[in-house]
Length: 186
Image (cartoon, rainbow, N blue to C red; front, side, top):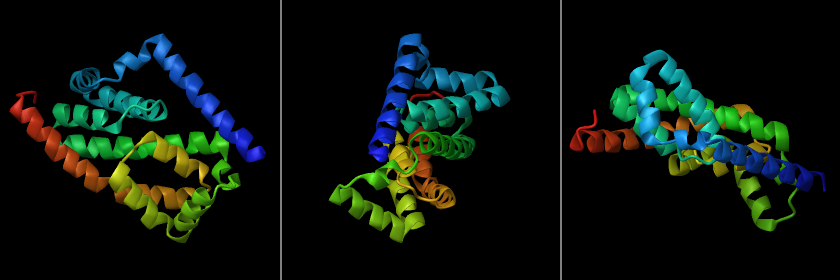
């Protein structure tokens, strides 16, 4: 029962946070042009704002590719990729710690056979599993929530995240750099 209550609290927290961003108008700022302009206008402050927005965006279901595209279009594929890797890692850490603080290891309390099987696989090879999940799903917020609530150790989460993020970020950097050049956005 305690685990179910914690899951409900996490869901309530996320719904309230999303509603605050939606009704306050802040969610409108989570778009490609706004993010790109923040970086272009203020290299240092823009990058700090970029990291903060990435952290908040990850909590409210904003796809990570928007941040990556903005960074690549503003800074180029190399520096945009580096900025995104750092921001994505910080964002994943922030989301993990926030959701873990609120929900603990609530998924461990589920009596669902599929959930238990997934947790067993995660427990057997946490770093490898997390790295593979990052390659496939990058910074998808639902993945961050599930991993935070899974009870996986933070250091294993961090290592798996840091190993898994570079490959998809590099692929997206090449893609968005190509699109930016084709559309003369750089």
